Length: 322
Image (tube, rainbow, N blue to C red; front, side, top):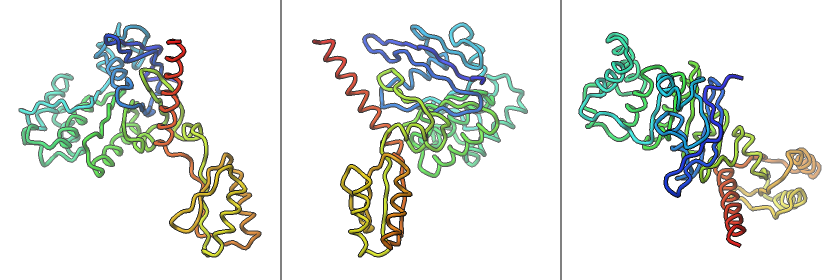
């Protein structure tokens, strides 16, 4: 497998703060890696190191086969970067911002104009293209900043919380942009605070907390790591509710939770209980209006992982103090 992004043991300190404490990750060509973590976890520091904006104290990283320290110029020719905050020139129009980037990338005037028009349309900014960016709303400046990062058709794109400040409709449109970039062959590293975003877009997810990688898997794999599934059963006839409750209590170690719809839900460890429950309900003549088995959401996974990390760190600190 060929990796577009590789990092091994990255460390970075700011004074007494360990922003990165041995971070390792890899992203295969044409894939999306979602990087999750609470505020201050080290996500943005990792992006800045990979984008050659910061030198790591130790560890190595390669982008498109180029070392981020020894071959920084080659890395910069390979990547596009959108930071957490829009960094457009507010005195220039939307189109002029993109043409400036095209000139810096040595595009011909014709190619720069063509690419600018394409991106303005793609990001729904054509109508505002002749206005100074300083008159744009926050969401419009964000979209212009994203467009600027794509002028050079980069092979690797770093998106650091790209949909912050966008309304739900524009966020959905941005998801379509990411999917299109991947379809065209780009590799994406996406940091986000929106768990749904990672679930929708990422092929794999790395969770960082306090500068360390605490989990890595596919979205489905992370959900399975979090533990219990939830089995929900709603009878078609409310009179059968006691039967449903009794049968669910028999397949779970916890008491069933009553639902507003008239049914019950319980945590279960094994998908096999679905078949057992269906057979038992059929044997009792219970018709159903709903039966479902849900994995934990990524929000629940994230909470479980970070709480476990906090408990582990507290325990280690106590042992050191003792």
